[in-house]
Image (cartoon, rainbow, N blue to C red; front, top):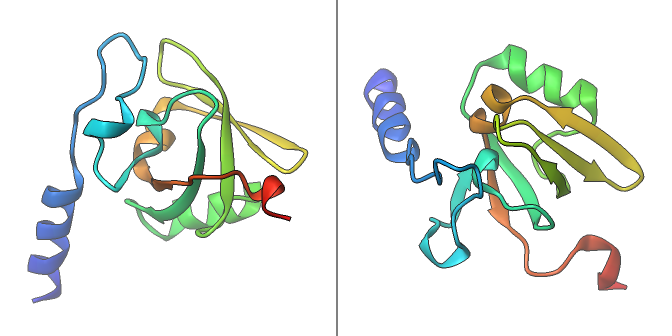
Length: 114
């Protein structure tokens, strides 16, 4: 039963609507939760999940990006890699990793909520 639910989640979560030029997808056409790879430069997102195993979850925690962390997309490149920022920390992520991290769009950056 768990395997069936897991496969169904993967099918429903694998939404590939990325712009072939690497420019991201407009906010109006993205689902509520989407892969980090689809986020546009300058957007503020919250990591809401990871579509991978324990190893990748552990790696993200070691990098300072556990589930629930707010990050800002600082830079994107045409191959799909990106630089994300959390507070004063900047982390470069490859395209493969960015596709496995699921995020939700934040309306306001965390720093300006005071």
